[in-house]
Length: 422
Ligand code: HGY
Ligand code: MN
Ligand code: MN
Image (cartoon, rainbow, N blue to C red; front, side):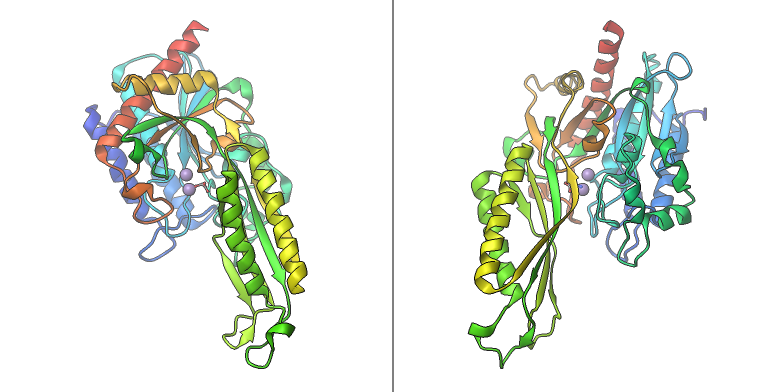
């Protein structure tokens, strides 16, 4: 293992994690904005950087068959079960600097601290930078963590990006062998669990004036491509009574989506809308829009979608339009492992907070996939600017990052104590 190049002072770890996040912001497919998507040249560069930082703290590194960047500190004997720490290295388009990346960098710093402390853990410690939490390039998401969990679906090889490049083609260009994807799958017996530190991506910690929280569960999400079809026509010559305006119909539905979500306590977002043919002097014949629908409980999410569809069908019937809904992503709500969740709470207590805040995550995370193969838990840290995320104004304070790093390290030690005592 490479000799330590790190100073063990706590502040150094915080600065280094933030400096590494800043360095990753420069690895982008966009000028002046951050976008790093699955199996892209930027993904490869980010993996190489993360691998180098992992090696600096003594981790043996490899890239798995799904493009996840991995590092391992062996346990008491070769092949020891591993506690995995990490998050994702990919981003949305026009992203912030911390969603995912900070969690990977803090995992590396925890390894550095534990190595400096000389503490021997009863298990191996791994760090992982998942390759596709966001699903920005191919629509479906969690491709890296689903491969890690042994949940890969061969139908995903045929998903394609905006240029028509399939996952299979992109994987080969990236240097992966699609036939070997099964090699990324981990076995439950090889894992102690998965811990992730992540910015909250919302205002709840700000409103509670707390830097940290332990996550109870992750909201389940479903994503749809919705299409309303009418008939294009002349913007001047087509009387209203004869119009089948797809965009006006879609607009009625989109406004009602928000009303239904607010009333049912679910979270719905229409992030993308397109009208065809798109001429300023043409009545839109087709309107396509996305729907991202989430809830703490899947039954609430699914009931809300049924209400949305009923309304959409009524509007379309009244306006002589056709309705089509295609679901392209689904990840059900997952509950954090109680033992690991208690360890995260112990980690927060170790920072001097006797009564850790508990909240469910409105944002999705790789834990939704990892839960299929091992228990997981999450530590949230406050993000500033009213909790804004998936936006370049995403921000964290170094004080909150320091608290998160202390809590994350203490949580790992709490898992170790529990593991020894089991
Ligand atoms: O969409 C989400 O909630 C996550 O940031 N991918
Ligand atoms: Mn995100
Ligand atoms: Mn994220």
